[in-house]
Length: 266
Image (cartoon, rainbow, N blue to C red; front, side, top):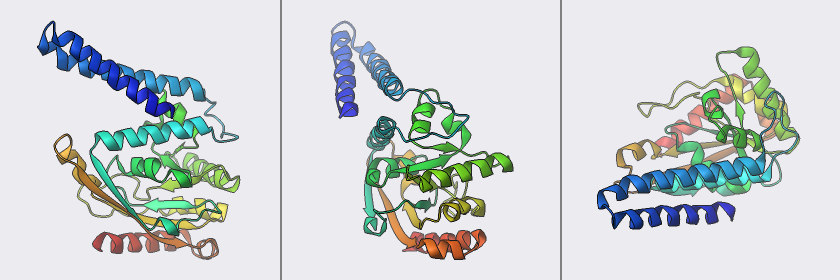
């Protein structure tokens, strides 16, 4: 509710600035609108940051901050709206409601996690992300409070620590965890090799793996501000926890990649 009210205030404040200055010099209307809108969004993020309060990132969180989680949802929804996304989600009935799980998906655009954050809110999925995303001022603290974790793939010891922390979050029922095993966004639409180490998170926590594929997000940057983009997120399969523990991480990575590959061709 708070993010909806703040969004309305942002829009009203920006509109007021445009109308007021348009009477003075209409050419100033557009830049003032942009500046006012950006300022109000900055205030929005600052308020959420104050409500969630920063945490000590040197240690895992003891519990998930519900206000931080709601803030992440609001940002996800806003950015999807601004990007002109029309999300089409299928297979939600395959996601468990009585246990945590590891969410595995391909990665095509910065909008991929925003769709999950904004539209699969019910399942409380927090992502393992690259350190630069978590280093964003204010937003990084909010995300950390919501259970998001940075992973440094160049440092094996640090990466293992993140994997173990993510497994602990699922064991303690804080949240489910989302990963992109490719490690980065694909530039040509083709699936990149999967990093098998991230699948150890599910094995450590003894939780199922939800395999999903996303299509269409790579088109957003070409249509931004021009026309809406249909985006498809399909939940393909839920691999049971006992099967997850019986397979090696390499087998899980290979199987998940194959299922996503099939899903992209469907």
